[in-house]
Image (cartoon, rainbow, N blue to C red):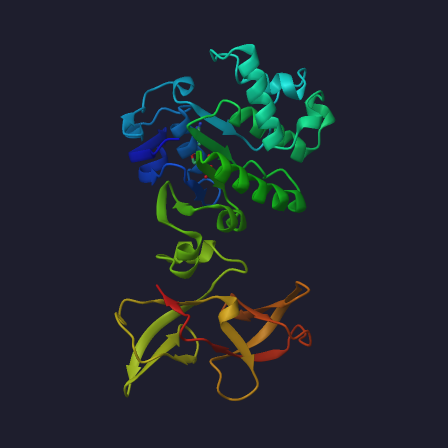
Length: 348
Ligand code: ATP
């Protein structure tokens, strides 16, 4: 397993910066997620690590060795893509064997490696089948076996579950994490799905516009997003944002919401009040109240019933505010009053 270090990595296509001055360290044995919206540069970063793209500038180190210009085959990296890349005319065993073709292993050693990988991925009974005889999930398991059989130093996965249905994705999520912990191979996993990121990664690097905007454990990213972008991208249902400014009236701090007459009374311990322009809170950090001790009055625009709870979507100030409740008795166009938990709010 290798420690990966990207130093000022930049990749340009014409005048488009796919990755811009990117710095990132993936520790030995770590499961790191590259999370971000479509087009933010996740795949390009991964391809540079794999050696499939040569950076325009910057450097890549594996265990402090500069591999920036090394070809892919000399990096001992294995990749799994969204579509399992298997040879259609070969059966699963022959497909996995292809990964060992260029090694110096004896036939017995190859047999042993294939058997180990197949049992780790629980595909022993599929070995004689051809790819078209497999389900999507089985194909991804075989592609993963094909990747791990080489015992790579680095394991790179590019949205490997994007084409699978929700139930299968959920099963494969825990399988992949379990496999990674067993093998302890340094892993970089690309996804735009924040649920995948939150549930799988040791750390998440949230990318925006060619750069990592924040890196941290899932809990750090969720509880302490450093930017509005990270706050809005991580969490489901998404965070609520109100634009306005903080004022101090007679010793009380108020958040005055733009274009409305609404003032939200804040806690006393405010700092940097002149810099903040956005108040943010998660849907579960506000409750619907019946008395007059409320922060905002809102009209219900939509209701999503999740079974155990409901997401109430309200229209407010040309935007949407989402609240979670267990009370099923609300209807579209009802007026509700909400109270925001001031200990949980964030400012940007
Ligand atoms: P997605 O989740 O949609 O795959 P991504 O975050 O992986 O997106 P990249 O595929 O790395 O993003 O692309 C980053 C940017 O670079 C995009 O604007 C893309 O159009 C551009 N880009 C990527 N590869 C090339 C290429 N070979 N030629 C020109 N532009 C490219």
